[in-house]
Length: 384
Image 1 (tube, rainbow, N blue to C red):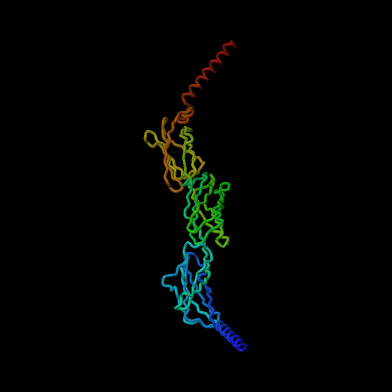
Image 2 (cartoon, rainbow, N blue to C red):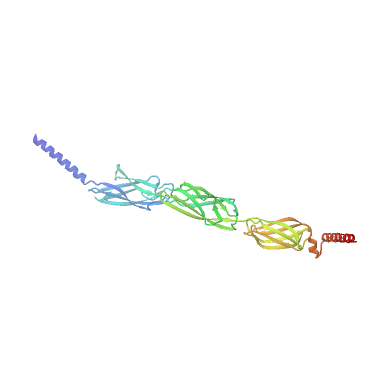
C-alpha cells in the first residue's frame, strides 16, 4: 500500500513538473505603440502609427493574426490592410507593422484608444484584445472674416461702432478669448471701455462678433488710420497665445461751403465764404450770376474745414443774384451748390463808385450849410 501511494505521489510530481516546464516555454504576447507620426496629430490629418507585437515569453509564437479595430475619430485609409499575419515571433523578440489612419475633422483634442486583437491562425475564437493610445491635438487659428462700421463712411467728429467677426478656422478650440483695440493716433480713441471685448470660447469652424466704439477727433484729416487688434486666448492645452491684426480705419471728410455775407464795399462786391464741413475743399470756382449771365468769377485752391475766405467781384448790378460754387473733396468727388444773395446799395456805395459824394450826403451837407448860414445871419442881426 505504501508503494502504491509513493508511486501516485511520484506521478503527480512528474505531471506538475511537465506542466510547469510547458508553461515556461509558452509565448507571451503584448502590443505597444512604437511611434506616432505626426505627434500630436491634428483633426483632419492622417496619422501613421507603428505597432510593435512583443513576445515576452520563453517560447516562440507562430501564425499570429493581428487585427486593428479603429473607432471614431479614426478610420483606416483605403488600401490599408485590417489584418496582418506573422508566421513566427521568436521568444524575447518582436515584430513591427504600420497603419495609416484618417482623423476626423470634428475630433477634439484628447488621447484616443485604438483597439487591436490577436489570435492564432485558424482559431479566431480565442482572441486577446489590447489597445494603444494616440494623441490628437487641434491647433486654433483666428482670422477676421468681416469688419463693418456704423456709420459706413466715417467722418471727423463721428463716434463709430465697429463690428468685427472673428472666426476660428483651425482645428483646436480657443478658450478665454479677449479682444483689445488700441490706437497710436491721437485722432482715434476707443470710447470708455470700448477698447476691450470678452468673447470666451470659440470652437473650430465657428465665429463670434466683437464690438468696439471709437471716437474720431474733429481735427482728423482725410486718410487711413491704423489701429491694432490683439486677440489673447488659450488653446486646448492651456497654452497662452496672442494673435495681432492691423486694421485700417478710413476717415473721409466732406466739405460744405456756405456764404457768410455779401455786401458792397469800396466799389467791390465782397463775398465771405466758409467751409463748415469736415473735409477740405479743393479747386473752388465761384461765379457771380445775374439774369442767367456770369457777371464775374473767382477761384481758390483750397479751403480747409472751419476756414473762411473773402472774395471780391468787380462786375455786378444791384438786385438779386446767385453765387454758384463748385469744388472737389479729397477723393476728387465734385460738389456744387447755388446760393441766392441780394446786392443792396449802401450809404457809401455811390460815393465810392462815382468818385464824389452820394446824393444823400450832398443833401445833408447842403442842409448843414443853409442852417449854419441862417444861424450866422441871426447873430449878426442881433448885434445891429
